Image 1: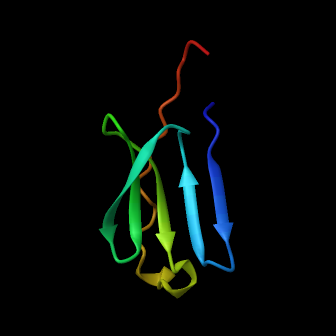
Image 2 (image 1 turned 90 degrees about the vertical axis):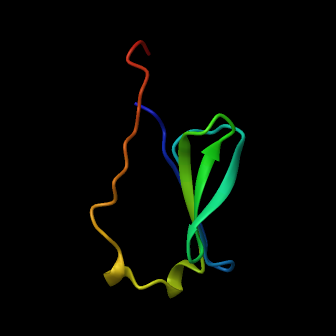
Length: 73
């Protein structure tokens, strides 16, 4: 199974979740919410700035996340 990395910086109020550790860019998809995209396009994570200020009741749950694994591993 692929390793998912979750990092929260309380002082910076920044949350990042990484599904695949590869060179990537951040593309804003909402207020302080960014997709982490690999250079060839797929989403490999996400980041939320000002995490504690976001209204968790307004989140759409469950979050639609698909984790692809290499079945040969």
